[in-house]
Length: 273
Image (cartoon, rainbow, N blue to C red; front, side, top):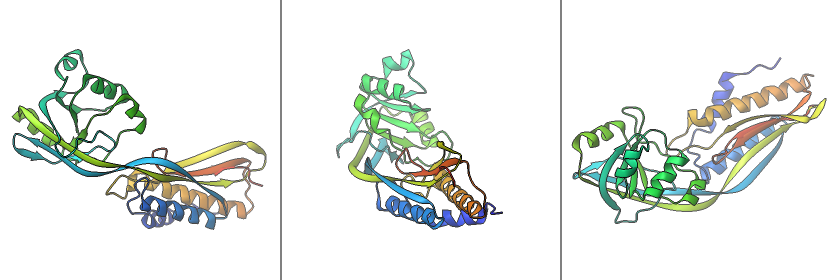
């Protein structure tokens, strides 16, 4: 009987361990490589190409009290231009009534998760910029972006800083800070890779297994989510090998490995004959 091999899954991971940011050449190469693996297992493979809005951060700077604070720009947030934005600093862990009174027209240090409702309130307040704080001490500023759908509600510039630098700002209480964020917004292509295994008894019932294969900038994204893609590929190999040895699947399967934020490699089990 074909058995799942962690070593083989690691080989898949290592072969895809390069930056695969959505809409880039690295992501395209990864999609092609994943498709090649799935075809080598004898599966039907379709590569679905679709339009994406992506970005490239050109400059991200935060200056407080004459001190440069290391930061990363949040993708698709508002571009400040070379001149940047300046303003008074206000701290918050949410958007209480007191915060709503104090934050208007200022630059906000925001600790905690930022959801759409919080984003809309910040935009409505007319804050000049948002400084997001990492949740774990000593973690370097993450490279993240905001969902493109949020932009219909407006936009504002955002950067991310380390937890310890947020503590510095809290203690130093600089009267004003300057935030600079310059980025290039790009139209590009992303891809979903879909492999299908045909079932036998229940043709209309489909089991879908998926993982996204793209990564953030400047990382191979081994945990998010290349490891999931590698395991999906090994599941596809094992599933196909079992079928060749006479084990049939009554339901259809689909393996889906997606690209940009939807993002997954999917093994789509379908009816096996």
